[in-house]
Length: 314
Image (cartoon, rainbow, N blue to C red; front, side, top):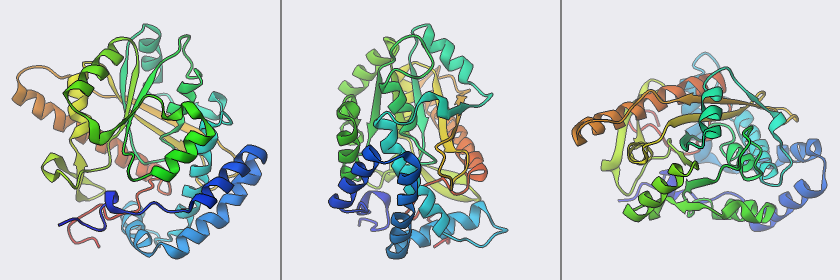
């Protein structure tokens, strides 16, 4: 029986007219004013989203146990981030607004310069559209144009995808629906990274349709379900894998300044199928530890509005 609280069964928030109005404001108004406009939108969704507030309360109790779980700031931060996702595709947020950290950014730049491809495993922390958008504009800090293919779930965010496409008609190019992944798709992705391309996929949305394809991994103190798919894809692509997190420097700010964290996976796939299965889980665990770290660092920026922990938390 389908879980009505699972992310894949949640209705997309916001009406068509509101998305159209938001896009119009982004096109004609200065960024500061658009972010101010996002505040009442966030407040409205906070008022009407009772189930989502309950899920966020559970998360905030885990990530900030010493503070009262006020959910409104996270809704406001999310509204601002939605604005900036669209701005990214509209070409209004440039590379100079992104502050790369002293992690593995030099490594990935060197590999991309050498013509190598990569798999980027992102999450719903911060703005996961950021890198894909600036790559589309050829503005990621390397001398060549790097083609990007993203694997997304079309069905859950249809309206938002349409708004992104209206902001930049090329945004829906080179996108693959997560539900369409098969042997032919994997072959195409292998060819893509072999030619120096990037593949982007989220690693924090589990599958309700195939629960046997999830990993149960401890996350913020309790077991949670994470998808096997992204990490199986990593085992098949034969290219470096990176965990990428783009978080606003200040969750509630009118300035679009981001910290970009990039970590190269330490997992190397080799050996028998059984050994690769173990390595796949190890990569998933490594990703979850990174996600946990940045949830603690940016507690108002993990935008998960549904029941995540199954046992005794809600």
